[in-house]
Image 1 (cartoon, rainbow, N blue to C red):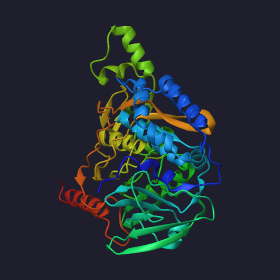
Image 2: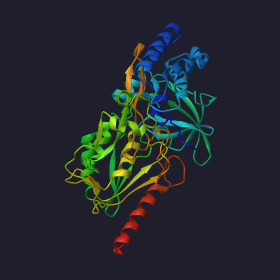
Image 3: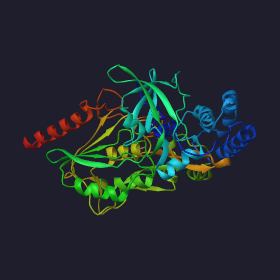
Image 4: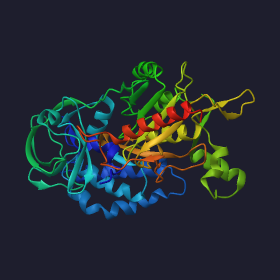
Length: 433
């Protein structure tokens, strides 16, 4: 089973709150939202070489499903099928409920994230103290049926507070169980953590770079990390978030003058055309015209030991920029001449796990009609080495085969692989190699 690109937004599909439905039996409201959406896309979205006017054709192809949509969630899902026809990430419609959850970190539902998998929806997260956790749902469970109907990509599990959803679930051991879970309010925020898992070796888990990222809390975690010679940064299932948070964490590992890649937006393309009187043959040609310098935050302390970054199919966007930048730049410093060079005193870096999501475009959330929002791409990204990550997943240095999510009570093969790497480094040092 593979994690789909729905992962970063999966929580939106299985939660709800007390918002009134907007489009319920109101075709004129649907039409207003769609016109506002189309206008916003054509005016603001940007990916080099993409004609966003094609959205009108994509929308027409999904019109039967859009017309049949009975509520905000069905409407959103149908419209997002049209948006996915562009074939890239970071473009989706969000309901007023979705945006409230993103802003407050609170919602009402059963408290899981899930992705489409063979036979149903694979649970990738169970929110702590949520109705789902109290009912006994676990990561790795597959939801087969919702209220007696087989699950597919259109299945919606939202509902009002106090209502009951009936689930048929297959556990990781193959056994099937039925659950009746009452929807309740809960917080979606996960606290980042650090713990020592071996002598002089720590595991830092960063769940998101989005609004729930707490820079002050991460500062304290990194103070603990400085006590270790070896550090594992776990970005599995971290779907990304705000670049400012990515730069904050990166500041603990990179010199603040080391470039972390290029943001290639409409302004860069306009400047290129004006100077060269032609279209760029390759995205790399736009790098000198990039309008924003991407560098890490200058931190007072920095980790310079051996480093392993864990990734999988749920590692996306800002997490991929972090991973790719450190892979290319970890160990580099800027000398007195302003040149980048490697410092031999800095430890080794390895990326371990499974291929990342390959979903890296800069985006913003834009308000449209009736309280809906649309996430739109506004720039592409190339690493400092000129590599495009969109639709080009990061391949780990050490591939770890296994399920797409870590099952409870099972050995974590990625962490085991990281510990083996650290041990080999230690032995080489002892032997003087």
